Length: 67
Image 1 (cartoon, rainbow, N blue to C red):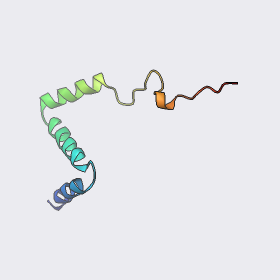
Image 2: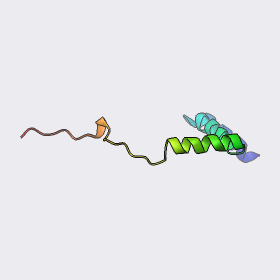
Image 3: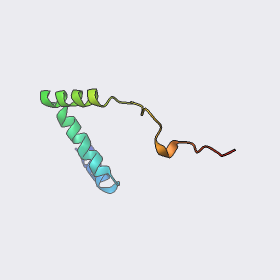
């Protein structure tokens, strides 16, 4: 029980911590039901982890130097 209280307090103090705590809670709840597991497998199928972009993002494109 003390660990749960510490997580909630840390989530309230750290910026974005509450959003991460709620996201982790929803993920944990979704993995417990058949419908949630089906939804997560569908999401993993549509957006594979570690997928690379076909072209580099504009912020990382090198500028050609005029010679």
